Image 1 (tube, one colour):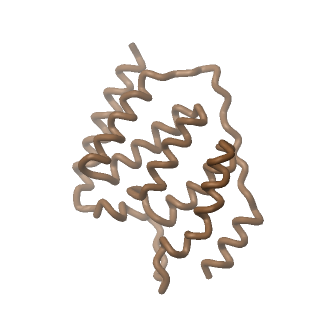
Image 2 (cartoon, rainbow, N blue to C red):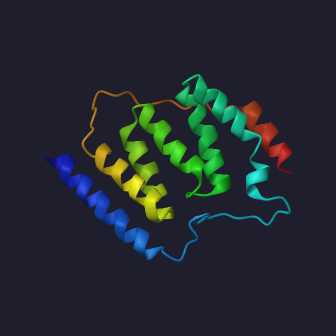
Length: 152
């Protein structure tokens, strides 16, 4: 019964936040830290996509998640990568992190994508696995250094 109550609270809270941020463009979402660059953020982060897809294909969630987090930071909370990040957290069995990722995505999107996110949040509110281990992420320093150097 607690899970249902929590799910309802999450849905109401995220719906209220979505209305409060209605002026944020759906394509970008709100980025809290921006630096003016000549090259678009999407192009700067292109070199991360193959790394993310490779880790995702191997179902190496611990390696895929940090790369998708970087893509979301570069491309915004309404990007397809933000949705993919939420799905990967879910596939990794990390219900709490998946819920938070879906909430962030729902707050940044409108229309059908917002509805998809809200449905995912509702489904996750019924799933609790107290025995699930916390996923230990595997950041790749070598790949991070390459990406940083390429983006300069």
